[in-house]
Amino acid sequence: MEKFNKISVGEGARSELHDLLSLTGAEISINALPAGASVPFVHSHKQNEEIYAVLSGEGYAVIDGENVVLKAGDWLRISPSAKRQFFASEKTAIKYICIQVKANSLEGYTMTDAIV
Amino acid sequence: MEKFNKISVGEGARSELHDLLSLTGAEISINALPAGASVPFVHSHKQNEEIYAVLSGEGYAVIDGENVVLKAGDWLRISPSAKRQFFASEKTAIKYICIQVKANSLEGYTMTDAIV
Image 1 (cartoon, one colour):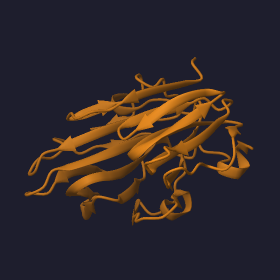
Image 2: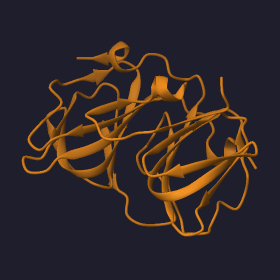
Image 3: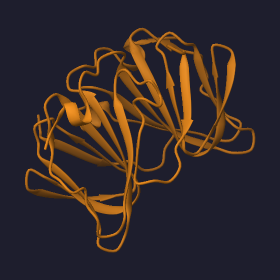
Image 4: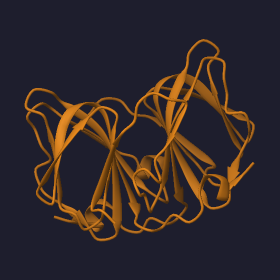
């Protein structure tokens, strides 16, 4: 494996980075929904925790039936088993990152994993 | 554990999300360097793959002595053992996300981990 990989992500409905960056600890997607649109299905996960970051715009997620309002700057962790679906607001598009990682996989981090 | 957690991240030099979001598979930080500034040390990792996303501005990373130019929209994966240091450009601040995950921890993802 290369010691690093770099890509530039432009506009588009969805970019998936796992293969483009040779990721081994996460899958990351960059997603855009136009105003009034939604991901067309509800889903949950077997093993993976998901972390969402809203880059721009507004929308909401429905998580196990609960409505969670989302705007730029918001970050959201969702446990694997929760049923989720994402929506842009009626008037504004939304752009967001979704990070999938295996739940409970992180051991040390920052000062307990770094070598300075 | 709650089925989900949400926070809003505002301005600041660094926000660390692990504890704020009860993350179990990643640590995520949001970082800002003013023009001409740098992270004041070189570091590598024992186990963790790092993935960087540039949210705005310009800068560069030095990875094992190699200069890697960075601008908004760029994504970068770095293997645990590579020595890295991040810099804003001389004229422009940079804002970026850093995602730490345990290398080789991801098993299934997307369609092989999702339940639709």
